[in-house]
Image (cartoon, rainbow, N blue to C red; front, side):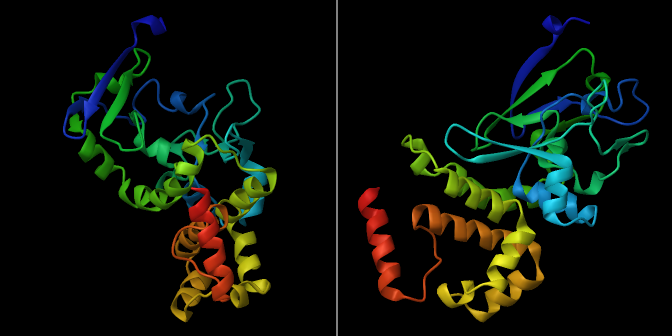
Length: 258
């Protein structure tokens, strides 16, 4: 069927739309082919833990990375090298990591038009039988049913980095800072070794409770990585150096530059 007959609609959080998907549909799994699935750091954390894989091994095996015009590193899921470019995690019965599938897969077919998530775009494709369902729901309920809240919570801190005024003012990260963001946020095992295997804890003023939390909980570690990146890129956030004078100097220089 021609894509010219596909329709796009805008919805608010409490607007209803009709959609459902299950293995009985003739198009089941076809939407998981030849597509760009951008992965957030939290997506990578969930997916590689589901597979019991170290972060560096997961990134090397299942992802591709590139730099945006602003120098921010972006990570996409690597499709199989078959004719249909199939998602590596799709089997005959559906997604093999369904409980830990990425944010964009959970949200489909609903996509926010901006970071504020006030308005949402739904493209009703004639090739997708899910839109022929009699089951209706609101965008708000859809997000709840797909367990989006934890993803939104974890992604909120990352947005503080990627949507920082530094970039809105036309600035770009240099290669060293781009690598810093990628290593700290995506290769979380490497960041953990950096924190606990170097003089890191002697340099940064971190309370014992936080140290214990980031040592035993990867979600806490990821949130801490966001704080560390924000501090190193923009001298912002609540992270502090043990050297009070140096900390004060960094923050004053940041304020003067902004």
